[in-house]
Image 1 (cartoon, helix red, strand yellow):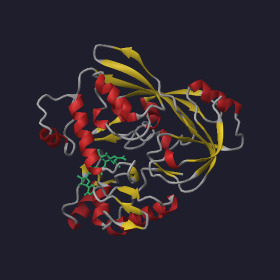
Image 2 (cartoon, protein in one colour):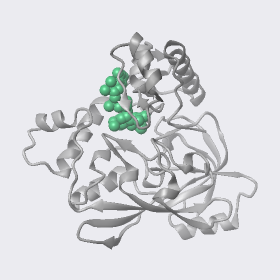
Image 3 (cartoon, rainbow, N blue to C red):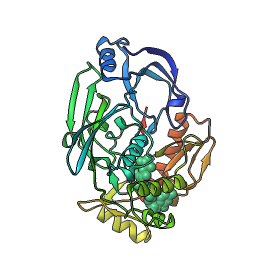
Image 4 (cartoon, rainbow, N blue to C red):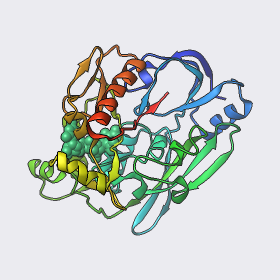
Length: 339
Ligand code: EPU
């Protein structure tokens, strides 16, 4: 059974770099170790919480729980056809390492998702997405272990209920499972997605003549590095808020007042507005209050200048949301998980 530690600092385990202590902490490396631990229930009475790569979380105080960090990094091919390869990956595997491995072995489908921080097991929870691709497109299935008794459950793509930065694991089933394995269906032949933002212009600037998944990945890495702060240097958890989705009617009304307001069709009479634009126009881009601020190149990213507490970041984010609400009548909701 995995060892249980007491009073453990989580500072190096969350990319905001916030100091917080977990009452109990454990790092099972395999599903058997995890299940044995859950069944023996060594910290009975304590709530169990799962920490992945810590890259999408804001911790606002000490954590009175048994915090489980799942470290299974295994990977194997479960099925192959002429067109596809189904790859099973342990939930503790680093996401970007997986992307690199896929590119090296010529498996396409996740190159646009390069450099997203975090672990594979967390990817389905918020259906990670970037540069015109979402995890749901390559997702086959997952296995998850129920935290209350160690029972293993399988989920198909439909059962996960994927939406924009959303799944049942963020809503109905929040806190119930630990995702131990994810099966992805990758493509032998690439289906290049180059229409989002600066991908094409970056590939041109790189002087790419023959398009490859490696080149697309490199372009995505360059764009991300130019806009998003490296958590190793400046604490952050990527986009702090979701991009709000409003009705076409509301959008037209706002356009009357703000003719350059960007909006992207989001199905069924809905429009997605970049929260970064709203925050910038509300005057918060590059703003700093004490140890907390909004990144100067991407207003959707809140940063920790070093010594911010989780509560300070939460208060700062509430200030942003209040001003966006009063200026545009749009409610911003956090994309990060708040503990
Ligand atoms: N914009 C501004 N000012 C800003 C930032 C953005 O005006 O300070 C406007 C611009 O109009 C820009 C548009 O917002 O064209 C879109 O910006 P960007 O391409 O940077 O994407 P985003 O909508 O802000 C989303 C994801 C990111 C993902 C990028 C690229 C969400 C909440 N965020 O950001 O995901 O990397 O698209 O696909 O959907 C994350 O989830 O942590 C994350 C970084």
